[in-house]
Image (tube, rainbow, N blue to C red; front, side):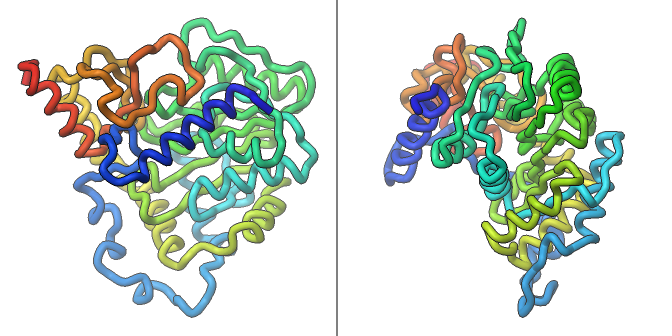
Length: 363
């Protein structure tokens, strides 16, 4: 198959090969992000070895941790204002594993074709390619762009979408989600929402609108490690239709094995934070970095941003000076010269600030 999605995947694989070579260009679109709140968010895990906090002689048995699943369900009830029970929660050690599990389930369930609203994360493209699943776009534009022309199939199928559209920090508009929900009810179709960057809204609101999609036909992926920008620990969870939860949990365990005790402890810590103080301090730090970069003159244009920590913008100097992800990495058109910028990467911020200072731009 030579779908545009697989061409995008090839670009990512080429970039990844360059990223791993020493002495290369500064990667301003990278995946990591430092911030001053790591120890505060880690709590005991910041200074106590996991073996003093948990029994390392036993498997962590993440899915058997009913207290964790109840915490996650309570968080979603509180944040989203809709019903959610532990019978929908599949906890896991990271979102990538859950993407692999979902694609394996698709294959075992006989799905040879999926529809998707671009963009989707390149790892989904990887699994589609490996499993021989045909991806079919339902729109040329991305959800936040103008008049979205949704071409949803008139039969029961699977639709995959990403909310928020992470590379540019934009949420999928409510009207688009409502149209998708109506289509689900009419056709009985399944929807998978990659919500890896959810719950990072700059306006301080907690609710994610994708929570209103029919619960018995919707999968939602949520990633607390992204929520806290602490990627060295691994935790994520999938909200699945209740009648599919056990099947997916069993499949995930047999594919990936159990999580570590450290990751189980972190999953509890992340759930407690989401039920408590949240990530407001981190989001203020992201916004401060955005303001610094905006005021410096290092950018000549930028797309609006309302969530997350990725900015989509045009740099003052040619973006080819950096290793960066432009529109071609997201199946996007109409944004020449724009690249994704990680607002939590100090090296990227400093490198861009230097370009403004070098040509006498505003400080």
